[in-house]
Length: 44
Image 1: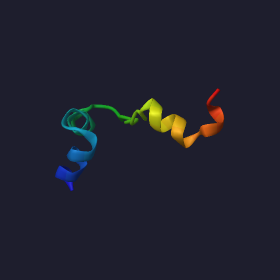
Image 2: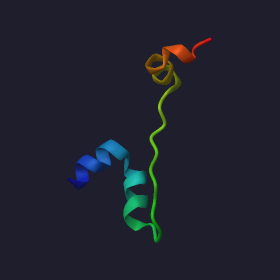
Image 3: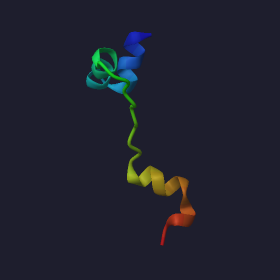
Image 4: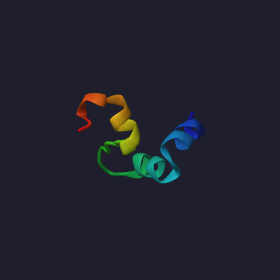
């Protein structure tokens, strides 16, 4: 499971999640083109 998680999140993110002394929230950035495609009403 660890290798799959690392593949999906990235090695730096995986390292921070496992070694941070406090809780960590990971947010994946959605590229702007995908954001606009999923919400066609928001386009001017």
